[in-house]
Amino acid sequence: MGSETSPNEKVLLENLDDSMVIERYIGFSKKFSPMDGVSCKWLQHNFRGVKVRVKRGDEILEIPVDTTKEGDALVEVHSFPESLKKLTIVNTRLIEELKKRGFLKFKVRRTKKKLSQKQVRHKEAVEKSSELVYKAKEGVEVSKGASKAVENLLDDTRDGNMEMGDISQYVDNIIANESTEAIGILTSLKKSDQTYAHCVDVGSIFQSVYIKMMERQGVELSAEKKSEMLLGAFMHDIGKSKVPKDILDSTERFERDSREMQLMQSHPTFGAEILTDLGSSDMIINMAHYHHVKLDTYMKSSYPKVDEYDDVIMETRLIAIVDVYQALVGRRSYKKSWAPPAAIKFIEQLTGIEFDMDVWDSFFQIMGKYPTGSLVELSDGSMAFVVQPADEDLDKPKVAVIRNAKGEDLTSNPLINLAYEQDITIVKDLDNYEALGEACLDVFTNMKIS
Ligand SMILES: [Fe+2]
Ligand SMILES: [Fe+2]
Image (cartoon, rainbow, N blue to C red; front, side):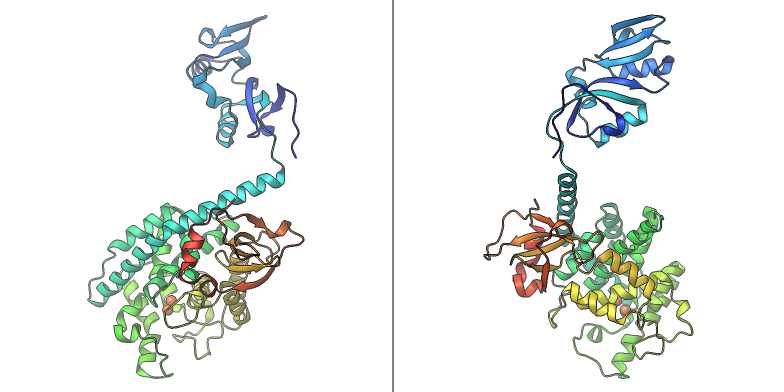
């Protein structure tokens, strides 16, 4: 636990924390000692009403800020009026501001006990997961709308009018709100149709994993690039617009080499043609063209035929993994879905045969063994949703408990970081739908994480 300290403790900028209120500013960068005309004016304007102590020549003066002069060296700023309270209550924003302006040392008093490192980490994890849950809740409608827009896009393309229509707006909106991760999580929670919601789910998961992969390599993508890629990922199956709708919507398994199967397997080539006509980038075309090509290109399930797996770019290798993950986890009316951890295990076994190992490793590190949104049973008999993947030990993600060991549903959902718990472990992954029925989406999106 943090310790109580005496009033008016002296603290350097880097040791400020949000348990503190600043009483006096007592250390300044060179631009305040002495002040030139600009610094002096700036201080008078931004610290209106405070008192200052300055060194003027050999004298130390205690004066109102508006009587300071060029050449005064600032020694102390104090007696903040009510209107400048925000310059005294320490938070991350203020610290940033102080750093930028050259305020270096302070006298502070503490308002509350300083949180321990563990409490701070808990608070941050709660905030982060709560935001994700909130975005997932918002994402339900966005994802429905985007699926409808993809359906319209495919219909329009089928009719020969290739217009982006609403879909671009959804893409820009999703990127602006940074909601791809949250929308991706919905995959295992909501019911989805075969083609259109699939495109939206795949696009969202692909994009959120890709952004994190790039961040880990120190690459930050621009908003335009993110939008372009999300749109491209949404359109990876656009070639399905050239497949007759009855075949597309059919839930039957077609015979190998049947006309239906051949048409279905032509969708990547159709897609590449459509996107070429639309003037899409090579990367987007590659994603549509080769997302069903397997590492072992001679496999029957690998199509279209390519000479070299090297023709398949990294982004396409990633979307190939996401494509299968979504197909397993997505809840369709005609088949049982897989729990996310089971889907992860399954794909892991195909890596090195069907999927690129390096890209899989990145996907696995980011999604974890228990992707966010997985429902698990804990060793104490309670039931919990995974709300953040593990930091290091992939068996130990952060979870929020939704039902206690007695089988009672909780109205407030405590967050547990399994990495810090000796006695609580995951003992089983559960099927969202079997455990919670249609309510599983509502249960997840209405969690109050504490
Ligand atoms: Fe496809
Ligand atoms: Fe697909």
